[in-house]
Image (cartoon, rainbow, N blue to C red; front, side):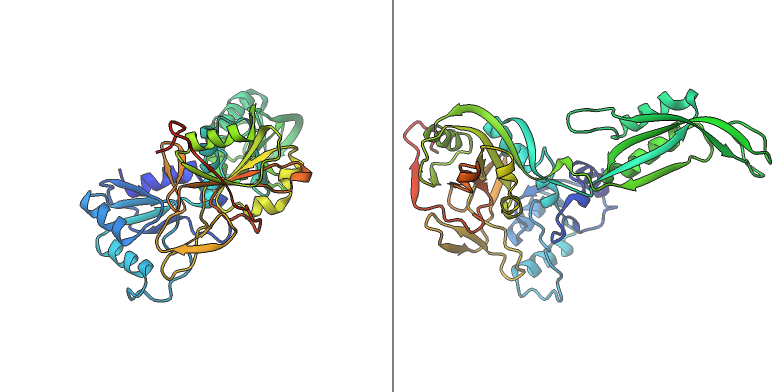
Amino acid sequence: MKISDLTSYLQNVAPLSLQEDYDNAGLLIGDPSRECTGVLCTLDVTEEVVEEAIRKKCNCIVAHHPLIFRGLKRITGNTQVERTVIAAIKNDVAIFAAHTNLDNIINGVNGKIADKLGLKNRKVIEPKSQVLQKLFTFVPPAGLDKVRDALFAAGAGDISNYSECSFTFPGTGTFKPGEGTNPYSGTVGERQDEQEIKLEVILPAYKRNAVLQALFRAHPYEEVAYDLVNLENEHEGTGAGLIGEIEAVSEQAFLTILNRNFNNSTIRHTPFTGKTVKRVAVCGGAGRHAGDSGRYRRQGHATDSREGGTHHDDSQGGRGRTAADGSGNRRCREGAGHHLAANGGERSIVDDQVVVFEVQRAGGVDAQVIHDGDAGGASIGGNVYRAAAGDGER
């Protein structure tokens, strides 16, 4: 297997087109044509991680955070990032990052957090727009089923929880085959009137190439007529945060669930409201975009759960991490990552805390568990829940 085979698979799972405009996901260092000898997965790429990859004979590192977040004007070894880049290049270690593109897919970071909480009836909190396209094509009736089935198999036709969605309308097309053509019907040099079916399907833009290739293979015409139009519609399968439901429990019981399922012994939270917890919103990453959008309030009454205690620092010097403590103060810890994905869950490696705080409670959202700890300006107060013996404490 070549490195390009691995990166193509990862990009198919979490397309690079879904990353935020400030991000730098993808293959950052390395020759994609080289054979892959092994893969090391990590949250952040450091000099120590590169050394570990070399010891384990892995010539590819897959990370969540991009090593090169902004442009490097020089590579002289003066910063940790520069030294890590030098080490990777000197030892032919490729580095690939899946960051906000992994945050923005429904089965990505948020999906794994939701899995740990057992959330049902999940919806994306802030769906992305300008992700969908509509394909129009024109097919003779005899070839309609073959073409439509091929488009569905390639990933077109999904609308929310419905699949194989399409629209057809009969009409008449005209064409005049030129010299050297091999028309499906008609005669070279003569205009042909052909009964055709106009077929419409929706597809995610990142599946465009696969869908078009399927169209060209299945369509009976030598030259396929089609239109592809960008849509402003929101795509419910991509975007920031997830909201879902659990069996109604008390706030104390919910904190116990967080402690047990995420292997944390300490949880900071806002004052209890006395309400039960049923609808839960989770947000991997800093969550600032979703929190500012007001969509939590529009989703109805929910407990918003974002897990952890750190915010990714995009500065090139030092690669430190900033964490918010329970009083709303901030502190930095050199080289600490924000969360480690392990066994489908998230574990804080800054201070082993899950932060729970209220956001717009009057509008319907009760609390939040943060996966990348920036509280979006809200103070979480000093309330602390500590696990009792046998309550999931490590």
